[in-house]
Image 1: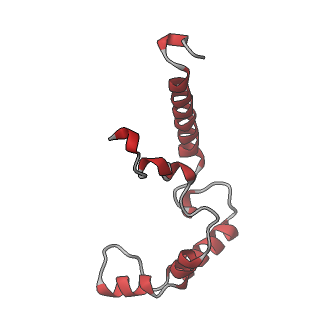
Image 2: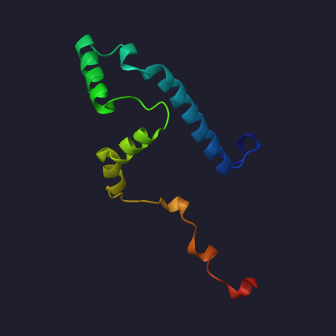
Image 3: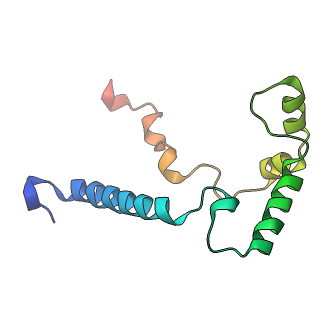
Length: 110
């Protein structure tokens, strides 16, 4: 697609990826139910079970603002720590790591 519309080929990659993202977001906006009470694909007993599980997982309240108690509750939640200690195969993607030659001295550049 190099030269189509006066754009280089690499620009078309970003244009196409952006258009795909916009289309998927627009479709997801109408397909994803924001709350269990509003979804249409669950039966009433499934909605009740889901709401019960969400209430049990939430614990004693919602976090509308960060208080000392909410902060301590967050720090003592085992799920937070399980996510922190879970080994990830790629903690930093290769695209986020600069090439090593950017930081190594090069006598020809001085």
